[in-house]
Image (cartoon, rainbow, N blue to C red; front, side, top):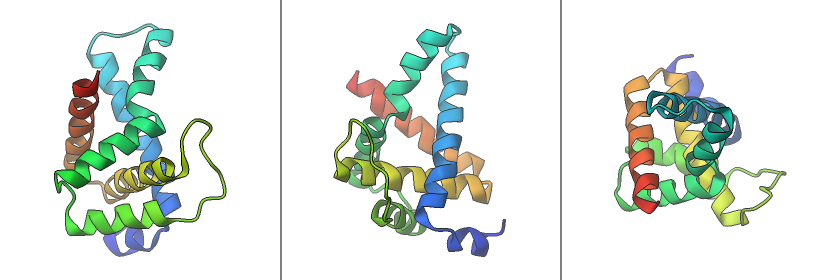
Length: 132
C-alpha cells in the first residue's frame, strides 16, 4: 500500500495489524535472548504485549515526545476509535491508549518502515525492562 492508502485506514484496522507486527517482533527478541520453552516464552511475551504494558509504553512515548507529528495523528486516531469490545483486565482509558500504540505500530508496518518499527520495539523493550 502506498502512504496515501495507509493514511485512509481507520485506527482499529491499523491497531489490528500493529498488534500482530509488534507481538511478532517481541517474539523474535525473546527467542534471540535464548528463551525457547513455549510456556516461558508466553509468560515473557505477556510482559511486553499486554494492553497494560502497551499503555505504559505509549505514555512514555508521549512524555518523551518520541512520535513524529504524523505518528501522533495516527496514535490519536487509534486511541479515539470507537471499539465495541473491551479488554478483560484493563480500564477503558488504558485500553484506548494501548490501541493508539498498536495503531502506530500498524501504520509503520503497513508503510514498510521496518527501521522505525524496530526503534519502537527497542524503546518498548527498554521501557518494560526498566519497570521490571
